[in-house]
Image 1: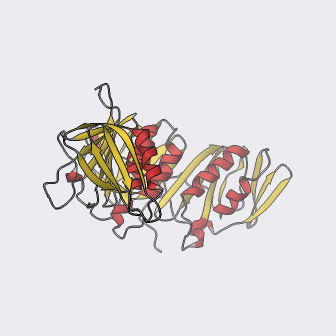
Image 2 (image 1 turned 90 degrees about the vertical axis):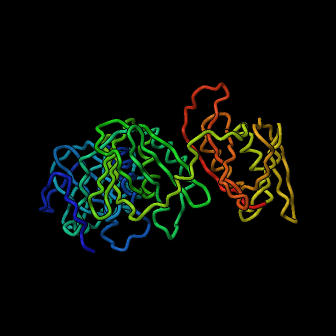
Image 3 (image 1 turned 60 degrees about the horizontal axis):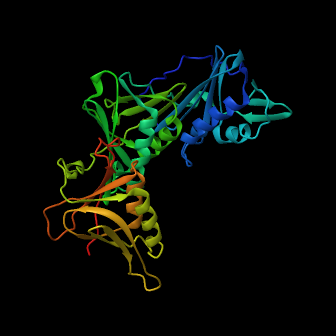
Length: 398
């Protein structure tokens, strides 16, 4: 496989292959190795891409992985006696470092083997041909910053609605649209759609950028950078597929963007207030839906009867068992009867961060097709909602 046209973004180091020796804190090294290894997919066609590139220079240690799609890099402090670079099996090194005793680690290169010593433990790892390892992608220069916590929360809220392994590749990612003050994030699997906005800071150079980022990468970003404070996003749409980079403190993750046109589903979001809606306690409805859903198989939908003062949930299509339960609601507008999949309802409610949820009944103008429902946060004190998460769900026919 030919290398992608990216330049190496690290300072060039010695390639002699005969000088590498450093000492490092055991916990810091283990955490760094675990971080980069998590980014690698389970199956890689080229064995060399299973390696971790270790580079030591000027009392700093950089660990990197790259599989032509996604890369990760972390830099930690180390006592470097001899600078150098080496490539070893990533998962083997991760297994070793996770089980080492609580003592400083010393790593050195001895011929074609890397010696790892920690207390009374000693390991020798065969090196891989470092000269054959691909250059890491260059970080795009144009960037904006977001709250790592807010961005992580948004990814978790949208994840259930994103398709997994769909033949339409763009549906396996989250749509990014950089608007004037916010990044609009959207995910869909055709049956439901989730939308969330995250505020950003920086120069307006990226306003108007639209891209699709793989969900797998975003899941790792959310896990890694959720508590890192400020998160820097760099996007480059100039290449054949484009690149996005996420960076906080000493860690970086990059990913190629998904090629292709994202479906025009955002047009189905209402741009005005919906007059017909129900207000319900979020956790109460989650609990009731879970109980009623126990008797349903294969994502069979449940009947949802919205009446004045109560919502009746019924599961009656199973000959073996049936269930029903009512939940208190405040209904504005006429009674509604719809059928919804319990799992999809729980996914939407789980993304709501307020005590009460607003379920709005949209009107698609087609009497022969059930209209979608919009699940969003609700503040009972009529204050401005603190969360702009929206979840659109398509009911089944009665």
